[in-house]
Amino acid sequence: MKKVLLIHTGGTIAMEENKTTGGVNTKETHPLEATIAELSDIAEITVKNYVNLPSPHITPAHMLELAKFISDETNSDQYEGIVITHGTDTLEETAYVLDLVLQTSIPVIVTGAMRSSNEHGSDGPYNLISSVRVACEDQSLGKGVLVVFNDEIHSAKNVTKTHTSNIATFQSPQYGPIGIVTKRGVLFHHTPLRSSRFHVKDFSKNVILLKAYAGMDGNLIKASANGADGVVIEALGQGNMPPATVPALKDLISREVPVVLVSRCFNGIAQDIYSYEGGGKHLKELGVIFSNGLNGQKARLKLMIALENTSESAKLQQLFLE
Ligand SMILES: NC(=O)C[C@H](N)C(=O)O
Image 1 (cartoon, protein in one colour):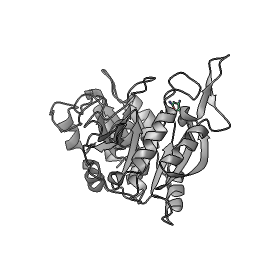
Image 2: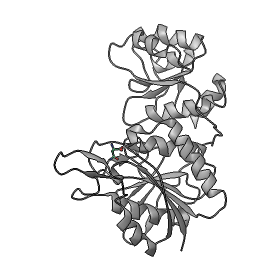
Image 3: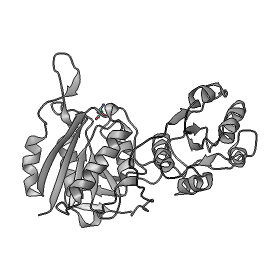
């Protein structure tokens, strides 16, 4: 039987609904204890109650600390898989940071729940069981950090939360899930390409994330980018910006503040296609960096991580091609 380390960090999977007020909040004793007892049929589980936070309280610093904790725990080779329970709001961000910084090749699975422990149809126990099954699967080795939710297996790079309350909230818009969990087994149908891994001690850079809109001018960019080490913008369509933003973007680039563009579209890749004022081709010629299909929140984390290693524009461009 495989040895799996189960790390709780909080989120709805660790919460319950107050039947009088209707408020959902963290519970002192972890509501998954009964499920964990059942897991002894599948794996030898060691539980660490790491933190108990709603995921909007999770910061990039927590994500790096969690990565360090996992590295320390896995150094001695005593575990063959890791399962992390996490709130869903920032789950994709934690999964992606772990994917970029963890050096381990054992399966690392992140999961959570959309319905708290005492609500009808609570999905926490089922997602936890599925995650442990995926963590015990030899085929999960070397695929990077995976998100297991509602019978699907997603890569950390592509997965995103798409619905405020539906239990099928996690989707991978670019390429779909890489596998499924069925009653009879775990079936992978894709192997994700692994991206580079980075050594990061701390996050010291201030990277901001903005969203473009029709009629946007440079004022918001100027005001918010003051003191920023990097700017990520969810641009329009294939990677275009309203022309009135161009002077502010030029100013950032002339001050060597990297500007990374992703698309505000749910699906697809931002590219240098349009050559009109503010179009992607024009922006690329100015020195804007295009990201290869990441969403805004992940591009921000990648830029934070990249800036800890380099500030060279050509190197940053190369890293965002991956
Ligand atoms: N479903 C959830 O876990 C949402 C919750 N607000 C959290 O992220 O902690």
